Image 1 (cartoon, rainbow, N blue to C red):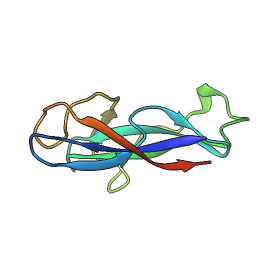
Image 2: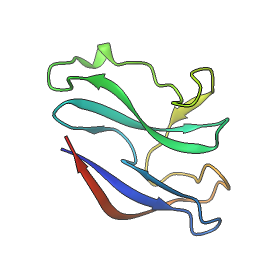
Image 3: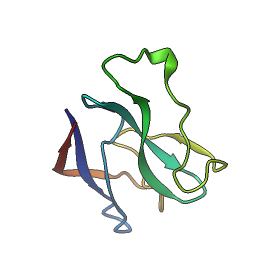
Image 4: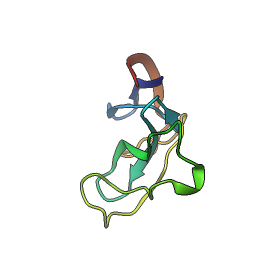
Length: 97
């Protein structure tokens, strides 16, 4: 079962509801990314059917707004995409499969 958390930057107030790194449910696997163009955090699907998929068959990570945007993995605790200060993980908000 995957988990989403509310992350918040106490410096600029930016908030994102993401897993905060690699996560896996029964039906898919996700990873949190930082899009350098959008200056946003997103969770993106890296594998469909996570139970049966092998790591070498992971889907390449892409910004959900534009696949040409430059993205990189983001792991908690990580920098705020808006101001660069460290994001704080808040409460668990969603459990997903």
